[in-house]
Image 1 (cartoon, rainbow, N blue to C red):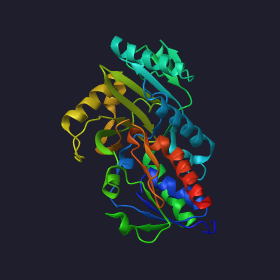
Image 2 (spheres, helix red, strand yellow; image 1 turned 90 degrees about the vertical axis):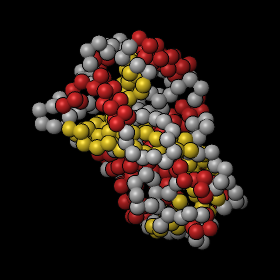
Image 3 (cartoon, rainbow, N blue to C red; image 1 turned 30 degrees about the vertical axis):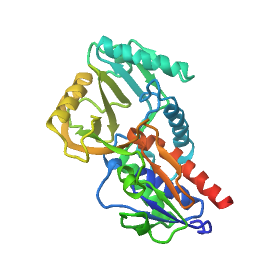
Length: 338
């Protein structure tokens, strides 16, 4: 355990972003207090995809850039200290169901190639993933992408923080409630604007399903499968006991109740892509609130001499956790130098 010689840091938020920031600061010698709620937040509902290629879209060049950098950090040290089984897939396959979806897929592939990050196109997607429905042919492979068990990662990061000497504390309603600390990091997702009014973060609802493998069913896929189904996006992410299926996306305030229509669309689309999933056990339906920004880029940096922000990660919280932790660590080091 490092000696706490750098100063005191209060991290507000106990999801994947807050815990990643806290672990990095603890490793650097800061005394860290994490203010976290008992209820599960967006990190509990996430798919856990580390997928800058397959989630990329023209116009989001900066998000692609930082996503690729963060994926590198996942591979080059962020997983150290976490159980190896938190990684559940080591490739993504993106497929199209109809000609319009195939056209969108080719648009993304061409854009990625134009950015200097080509992916492998295929017209034989079922040879790559035999569980795909007959008739699905077009796709591309993103062979460096990963997926992680989101809940296992959060638990492992919390355990690492414990080992390094973190102090746990209740959530706060205002920055003045955070107690004495040299520096405060706002990392509480959709609640960030309550602590710093004006931060452009809003909640966007997303429903996610968990399907559990049953004896006699076809095996769990070994890679992430993402698809466009008549314009809607769906993903199937492996877990040790089944798959995670997601995710809807719409703005509905702070409502976190799964809806019949949302669950129906996800099941219909997932089974249209991989019919064998219809035999799995329906284990869970949940909805989370993604902290979105107007340009889909996270808010990571300094707000004033004492306050930093790490919020607004939208659909990319797990992917961008290492990049965010390193960015905040650099800001803290800068504060130390000054």
